[in-house]
Image (cartoon, rainbow, N blue to C red; front, side, top):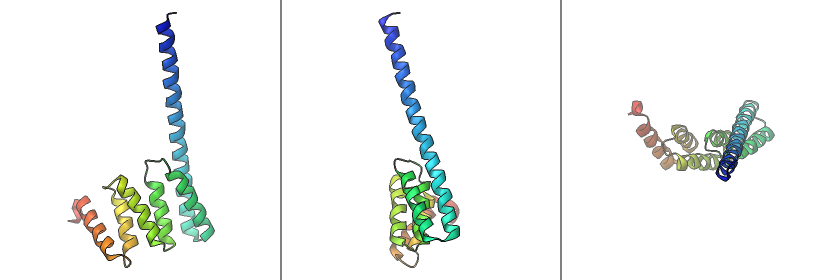
Amino acid sequence: MTRHGTLARVAVVLVAAAALVVLVHSLRLVHLTQEGVRAARAAQDNGDEARIRSAERELGRASRRNPDPEPTLQEAALALARDDRRRAIALCEEVISANRGSVPAWECVQAAAFDFDPARFRRAGIEIALLVPELR
């Protein structure tokens, strides 16, 4: 076996190992997201403050280093259910800063800002109308 053949095999093994690490990390994020969403729905149905806090922690873990906005939006929904509108808006605006075209995030801002922050409420309505042509 030549030196180049050995180096090529080592390179293939290293690339395969890196791909495996990325896959395991992605699967972990999917699992954390599913668990967090499940806990959030149960907490919202139950209304128990301790369960809501627990679900928020799970969703917070799921949203770290996760490009999927779902855990953050679910966490915002829980904050809104607790009437913590500032937190809900802040979480939704995190999603918007990463994806300006996120209609669910703008809807969340609008729901949280209703009867609380008229300027944000109007701005969210305008953004939603621009993003959803059927509403124009």
